[in-house]
Length: 433
Ligand code: 9WN
Image (cartoon, rainbow, N blue to C red; front, side, top):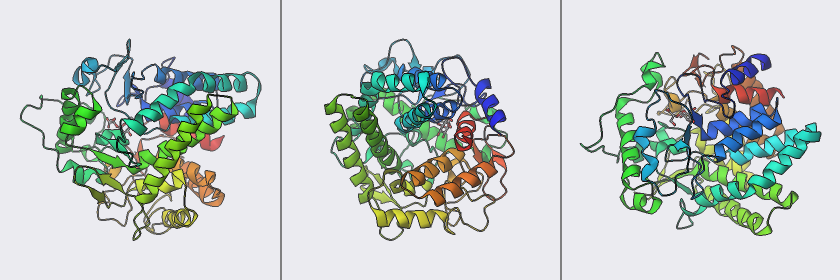
């Protein structure tokens, strides 16, 4: 399996970056790049560092790391002509990007890479440590952007302006806020290209959902990608609990690495403050009834009660031992990974016991290997080795067909969406290392 996974990453390698997948996603995606880098590190630490370096090349002046970097021409839609980031004061020079962001997984990846490099020693260790020191301020700026521009009132939840920013585009997490997104008659016409690459349209978001995605994109352009302007006028403003948990965990890891390697103390302290604030935000979101964390619709002030895998955000950032144990048991229990109908006991994107569950539709039920990796990583980090090992073993068993698909049908085990997806191959390499 490792050989085939390495082959997929090599085939998707474009020298200084890796396309998310060969046909459906022929560009560099932000959180994909984090997972890809940690997978590549098992084979080559310098190449893994290059992946992150390229990603940082697209960072905006306000610290935001954009969700897509367009390095090549392709028919991906929406491409640069739709994003029109030239209206944004903060856009980077010399590289075309989208104008929104994705979950801050990058420093988690960097800490894995550093760990690998230290195990290998020599040049690998030297290069990885130098890279952390050299890029510390850039990651800090990214985290500071999320903690300030995206949490101006210091609630401890990162605000997202588009479902794409969560990485879980059509998750039922967003059904209520999207119900208030009404594409205007002036939405420019569009032709979807994604359906040309996936044979069964029911595996992808619907046309109604797509129109809403493009309407929010339009609203971001009209706000010139200014967060204050968008907040005042945009239809979708939601506190995302998973992004917040990742920000908290990643900020602590960056603080740890920065402290060890002699990075500026002020930066290290600032990161600790960010970690504390967002950990508290995640804790406050816990539903006493379900034990799951919740997103907050900042337009209506309502908690979003959905049984999605993001509800286990507390496992990622930690902060309350009893609640963590409850989440661990819930995740491995019969409503989730231990559900009797599942082919493989990996993390489904939505509980199979939930009325929202759709077994073939994108983020509405299928199992995404990267999500399973994330929770295995989180459990391992909080000392829950047995639980982590069970997700790892099931995750590898699920990938045995070596399709390295984007997502899997939970009941039949069928591979769905794009095949040869880079981040799926990458997490397989990490699991096998
Ligand atoms: C929109 C690349 C990306 C992932 C996202 C996943 C999907 C894009 C799309 O693909 O989103 O960003 O066109 O559907 O939802 O998590 O980063 O793999």
